[in-house]
Length: 396
Ligand code: SF4
Ligand code: SF4
Image (tube, rainbow, N blue to C red; front, side):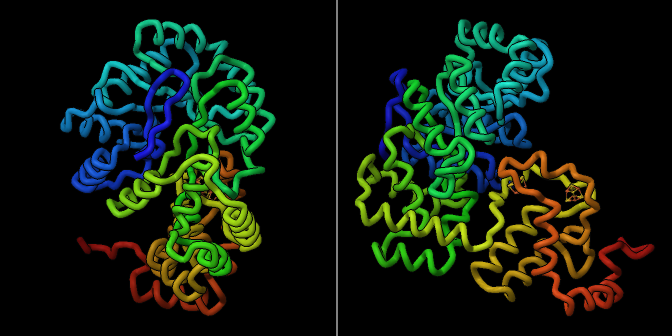
């Protein structure tokens, strides 16, 4: 494992673990945690809003006696903080869940603009942070960001941040904070951590065939994921990146890439290949969903991330297998409930999406492709024979 030292002298593994996608099964989670420690990962990121996630990490830290060996990062939801009492209540819960009495890297979650920061300051954020730092309960203070570039630059200038967490990948050079934001933060001496380096897996194993060919033409043995990660570590401005690894194999692969990735190591040919892949990807009509589930739950029961995942897979692996996945994962044929057609256009989801996806509009696109006419015609018949996904009277 390679390590980079932030300006406060903390030695951080260049590969951090994004815990948001921890499996539901605690045994599987434990295996991943063990694998991550064995690989030398010493940074684990969670959030108050990731259901059950802080508690799962806390249990593992305690069970493995790992608290002092790793850095714990967690996030406070600004929309729940109206005054000092709110900050205290949430922070106290987080310490309990994580079974610790301090947080190494504490973030304001999705702080997307200076106006939001001003409101937090009015609620007493600056004084509260100063107090927690004074007591050693917060070691470094930062924020995570999914807004526009101009807002990011203003936020960086608005406070003495000790780090920040931005979405960045070769698809994000001109998106959200972007390259300009990354360089601005670095020029101000703010260490930059990166999330969604693989865009929720889209850049790992779901590249368009044409894009894969470009990478293979330059290096036949390197995986698409390793290209995306190496490209990021090539930037000296980036301290570490978070990957939400879901299997021991993914941890091993990413850690192996982290072993040899270095800054300014990309050749001109490699840089050119990445730029061409980004152009192919952008032209490939994927929905930029990372599967973060911030838009969920949908009151009408639409399984939004699965609808988008099946749609994207249909673009990568063909329509037939995409539709099969769509039926399997959304219950489209049987109950309709999770499918795109169940959307009642309540408008709750889009404002919660960090990728700025217009969910209602994209669900229409999904429906058009994934529910062709023959499919819609067959739905009522299948439902008749299956009870429409509803339990029959008297059944158990
Ligand atoms: S707009 Fe549609 S998909 Fe979004 S939350 Fe409302 S019903 Fe669900
Ligand atoms: S639609 Fe947006 S909020 Fe929902 S899972 Fe995808 S990226 Fe996340």
